[in-house]
Length: 139
Image 1 (tube, helix red, strand yellow):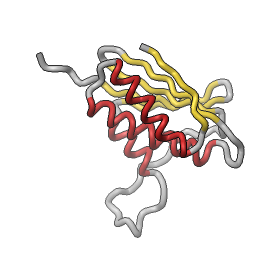
Image 2 (spheres, one colour):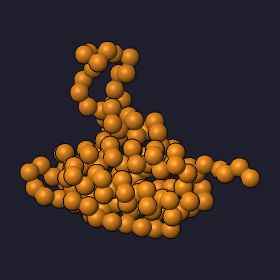
Image 3 (tube, rainbow, N blue to C red):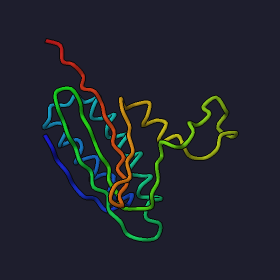
């Protein structure tokens, strides 16, 4: 299954993104926990794109969903500034909240929740993909 949709790169689009993912993944037979985890990870990535990729310009984010029996894959694609969030060092979560630097927790959360995260810059676009292995249903 493949579905895709283009969203304005603005925080107000988060509800539409969550609805799109829920509807698409439910049709693919995803479990509620899978849907929740993917929505949360996509929300974090989309928020970063909306906040930083385009600066003062208007931009869009294309969200592509692929589902198989083994895996759910989501790609978030923007044509904003080149940026690979996977190059950031992981945050030091042993520090207290007052001692910790701002930023970095979102991509850390995405890496922890997903089974795969990859970045590619191709044809002037940032492509951040997340993968989640499917929960095997008990019979």
